[in-house]
Amino acid sequence: MKCARHPDVETNLRCSKCGTPICPKCLVQAPVGVRCPDCAKLYKLPTYNVSIKHYIIAVGTGLGMAIVCGLIWGLVMRFVPSFGPFFYLNFLLAPGAGYAIGEVVSLSVNRKRGIGLAMVGGVAVVISYIFSIWFAGFLSGVSFSWVVLFSFGLTSIFRLLALALGIFIAVIRLR
Image 1 (tube, rainbow, N blue to C red):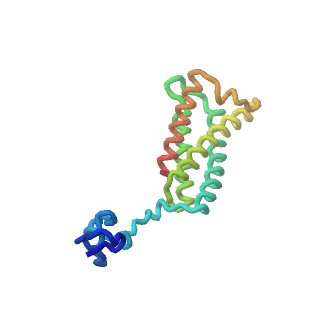
Image 2: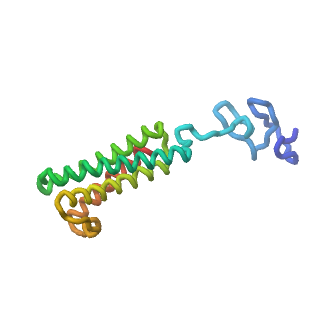
Image 3: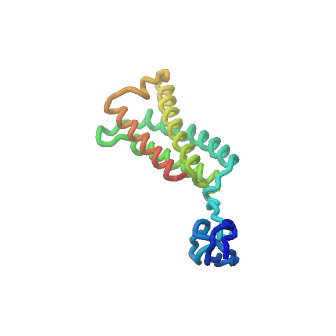
C-alpha cells in the first residue's frame, strides 16, 4: 500500500476516519487514533480568532475606558489625601483601572482573547496613567510635564510599580 500524499512511501497505516493510506510523515495523532491531515483539520478556537473588526472595536473601547479611568484616577489622586508611606493609593487605583479596562474591552469584543488584544489593554492602561497625571495637574493648575512621568525617586518607583501591576492585570484579562 502506498501513502496517498507521498506515493513513493509504502505504509500499512490508514486514517481511522476515512481509511486513506497515510505514512508516518503525514499522520496526525488524534484522541481517537491516527488521522490524515484532511480529517484532522486542526482549527484555532473561535475565542482566539480575532478579526480586524474586533481590533478596531477594542482600540475604540480601550481608548474610551482609558479616558474614563484616567479621569477617575486623577480625581481620586487630587482630592483624596495620602495615608502615609505604608498605603500608597496608586496600588489600588492602577489594578482597578487595569481590571476595568480589560473587562470592558473583553466584553466589547465578545470575550475574544489574544496577544493583540492584550497589547491594546496594556497600552490603554498606560494612556489612562498619563491622562490621570495630566488631569490631576490640570485640577491643581499645574501644566502637564513629562518630568513628572520620568522623574526618579521613591514616589516615581511606586508609581511605575503600580502602573506595571495595572498593565499586568489588563493583559491577564485579555490574553
